[in-house]
Amino acid sequence: MSKKKKDNFLDYIPKHNKLVPFGENKDGNVEICKKNKGLFNRIAQIFFRKPRVSRIELDTFGSFIWKQIDGERDVYQIGKLVSEKFGQEAEPLYERLTEFLHILRNNDFILYVNLQKK
Image (cartoon, rainbow, N blue to C red; front, top):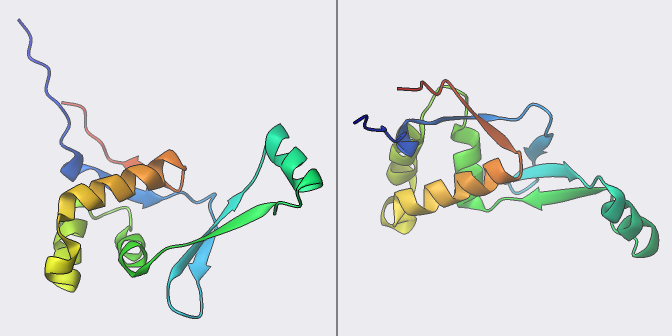
């Protein structure tokens, strides 16, 4: 019988998606810009005056994590940096961190690189 090895999420290396523009606002928090594409978004833009680009402002915790994502640090290393910066305030650390990274990934704000299949 062959045993399937599961990937350890802490070994994943997140990287910013180059197609997603971002910057810092006057408060030092990261703002991510997301284009609202597609038929339903276009209808909402016309009839409900919804913006073509949404600006998503991250809080202090999210902004710090975003700034640590460099395509070289893995999730575990980012978690250690978050723990050093925020201490007990970040707990439960890895549950919050992985959930945040899943949200960023599901919205195509980040990608994962250097995943080695074992």
